[in-house]
Image (cartoon, rainbow, N blue to C red):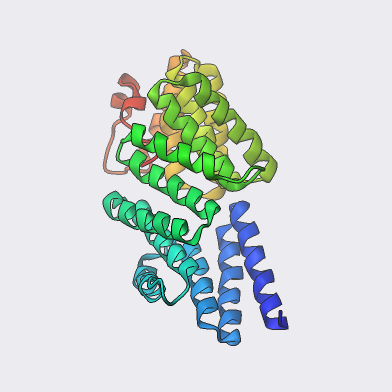
Length: 301
């Protein structure tokens, strides 16, 4: 390995570690530098790989609109089984699917997620197959197909290599949430609590927001508002620290319900009033205080 290649790999590893820690801005800087290094190495497949890594972070930062045409070019360029790099084909399809998921165009997202799954299977990369099944589950769940999403998440967990990883923590969270929706509370809670322990150990703060929200919801579903409130408060604190507006809103919805179910209507109303700050043209505090908000939100959409 040349000195430039070693520098590229070091930057890529730093970017991956920053993603695990939830610091996407730092990851963006590392991947941007890695792309410049790849261009100096002047190997087209490496430039495509570095471009996919950078695009993935920009998509998470909601700056990915302009990256989709480039990713489609990488997908087409590497999609021929007799030429190109099948790994880059997978990464491009996976990233495009993620862009459409965040844009709430779930139909298009599912198409590209299935392309990514098929490419991962052709490559023989079990870890990437697991990631694709997880992504397919996310897109199905966003459309409220919880039974099909459960099957996809179960496939993802079966394929995943043993040992602690961010991906395992996320899949356990997703599958646990689905099982709660499907009525299998015992297995669902086991997966959710295992996810919390794993993600805490990894320091995966962004992923922890999701599992704390899911636990808050699951505990409310099982008439345990005091415990739900604790997870809602943890989710809210992390989301505020990380600047995750959608997660802040979901936490306030669930916390309002937890306080109300716990007999503290004043604290519940405070949460619903805070929600109105996100919707300056609407005033629905009284409505939220009178209905079960669990029936009007989808944590995975």
